[in-house]
Image 1 (cartoon, rainbow over the protein chains, first blue to last red):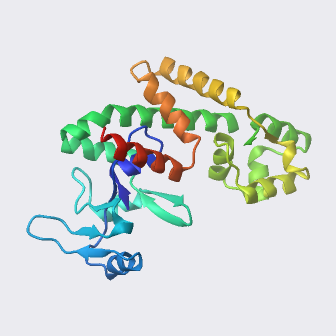
Image 2: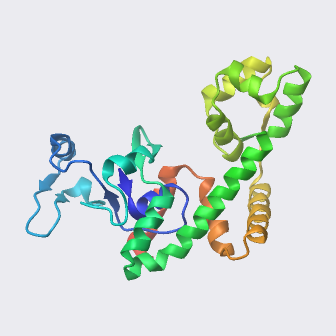
Length: 137
Length: 121
């Protein structure tokens, strides 16, 4: 599932990001290693407190997030996530409400910096959706 | 190109159909219909299904929106949203509405290009 600022931008939030954070149900899933190898990359196992990492030209944009602070476990969060089409792929994307909740919990300076933009975007998206729906009722 | 809700209503009314009937008969989901109303891009299969159900050409309910109209509509909607929620930042609302006009993958591409260039936000 795509999480973090990349997930927020996919939903329309006007923020920028340097990478695409991925949250997996099970980091030992052999499918991850297979997918990484399919694009010529390498899976770097966790060392001490460092999370696992992805290496290789085709994976430079991706980071692995072992846990999402302030949220429920993966199974609960994925149930209420969005499914989006990115090119030919269909991917799970953490909802903007939940990204905000996680950043509110983390409170790192970079999280606090983008929180107002995320909240403004969420309000704008919801209001636009309501207006479109009311036009069809 | 965007689906015109006003034209759809006229076409439905002339055929004695409610919009609910139209969606049911054409097999187009409400979600897909909202997508067609709010996006400039179109879903060819859904458009064709609606046209077939109404017995008209798709051009009967699609409208071409000029860049000027598009920007004006976004400015109008930004004003309405901020008037309703004065605590919101006008620029954030406007940028969000502009981004919602694009496909998700384009939004992400744009955010990554800027993020890697500036290391901001």
